[in-house]
Length: 507
Image (cartoon, rainbow, N blue to C red; front, side, top):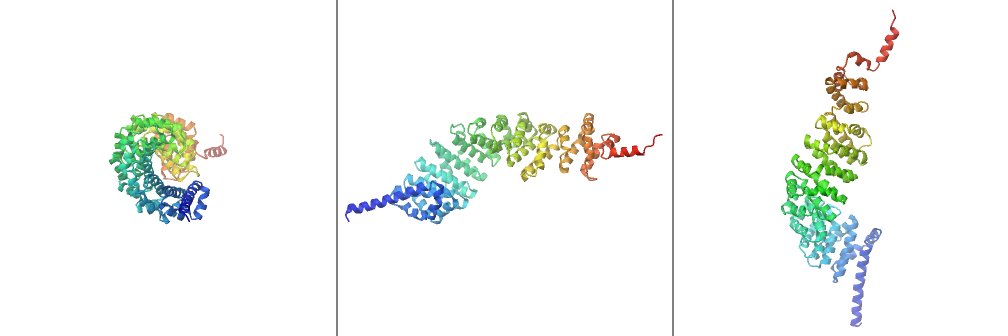
């Protein structure tokens, strides 16, 4: 065989290998092919090609493995079982930028599925290798590495700590300063994933100066970047007063409030989430948001969106109102109650209804004026209906009941209370009757209306156990009226009169 023929054999072999990995990589993009490839044992065939002498074959083999692992946790586990990860990690240090991007993609595809698979990446030195990639000149390599680190960090605090311990955070902050938008987005997303687990991890992100850099990007025109920036700021703010104050001191308000009108749904949702995480901590932080026009902006936001996008805004109003009478009044004056009433009626999801019921309770439980604002919006019957509805989730029933009871204990607006006399179960009814027993002794006009509207008659029909609090409240109400009027409206009184008529002998 001549030299030329030998070279042709090698060229043909190389071409076949290249054709094989390209075909597998292409087939792996379509879900219907995955099981067939797995059954054919493609993992073990691809593994030796990661060490191929031809760089383009190595890269395409890695890409094919990444696509397979990305598809399901079974295939990701197969990558771990085939002992492919150590090989990839070892190669990361010496190969070119194309291979590094493909290898980082494989590590991300494995890590995304579960904490256990992420731990397998950590155990083979994957985190350290990825952090080294963050120091590369090529922005595509940095992006691939940051993305993989984010998937590892998002699972739990322990994995997040392993990313921090490898020195990733300062390098991720430097990535925020790079001109490439895609790299900025992934760096902000990964910082968010690191920050979310514990105050200590969030503090690590703060200590590297990340907040100032994130704050500078809140008005960036790129919606996907703003999503990640507001997410990261939210994850830092949620943990403690001191961390929330650091975010406020970065002077993101009132500019962040303006972003509640952003065209992108998820920018707006993440801004509302940030505001929720801020206001929950202290009345002072809530007041900062109120002073920026935050309440009116959130109420407008609730009117413009639906479903889970509403949830952070609904809860934000509840947290603000919970702090004090004056903050609850601010929510009422901004027309927050009618908007929450709409949310309660329009949203089919029980967890959203439950959050709305909770927020309504936070507004109405302070004083009789606050309770009246809720009652005049006809929310007491709605809360009662949700509590009594057997199809309501356990959480929705519990939150509706708690809100209803806390509002009733302050409510002195009798027209709203009277509607509940007819439908409320005894555990709610006692609170309704209690309020009547407090108001009627001091209000003659209310006593007259209570008789003419049928309220007194209804109270006489209530079956209360002797000596119970409910019976005591009924007795207190009855003592507000002449005895003959109470008798007149008592059940069976007409029969007593008829009996007396029958027994009556005219003179």
